[in-house]
Length: 267
Image 1 (cartoon, rainbow, N blue to C red):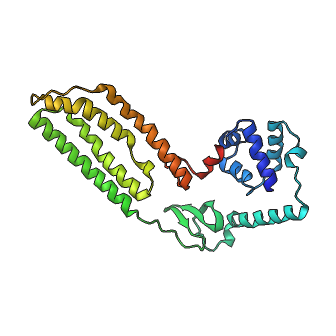
Image 2: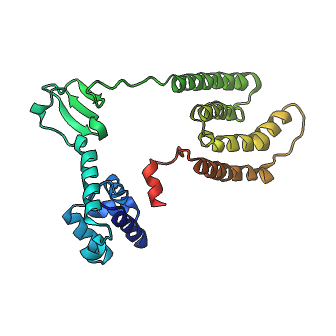
């Protein structure tokens, strides 16, 4: 597959308003397969070429027309074949690194593979060694801290309810653990989009509009319930994530809400 043809496939798909996933569904393929065509990393087979031509209302000659010479096309084909060769599964009798009761269920680039047997699923590196999954200490610590904070919040809620009778207003403290831990996740990922702005906005809204007026009122201090204009804090949610998302995109950072990098091809 040449770059010229790959670009043509992208333009035709976008011309007819298909996303990669929608086109893949029509052809009965995975979105990754369509993505590889459009990156010139793989070529559609004959049946898929015919389907694409009919889908876009063009002839095969128009679909595959290219100005590149035969030598360039052959070089690109050889390069693609070399890159795909490690991913092709060899017959089991030729694979000395696979146990008798193991079955290969996935082979990745460079010869990395995943196998399954009665003992479970095993991941192998390209050199045949078993891949060790590193324990994410930071995530474990954040999870432990969050569990501890929720426990403390539950204890504080019970105490405020029993001692002050604040059962109906003290529930907002359950927002605090997630707000604190989302800040920690931001620092861990070095990405501000991991911050839970929605929790902060809801917490702020109820704190000012409900909790403080009721709590102070129990001591004879009058404070209005600012249901309006405090609703404006909810505008901070889309504003924050839109701004941070734009900054991340400009810096080339991954958005936590994206499925994977290939989704950017559908924009």
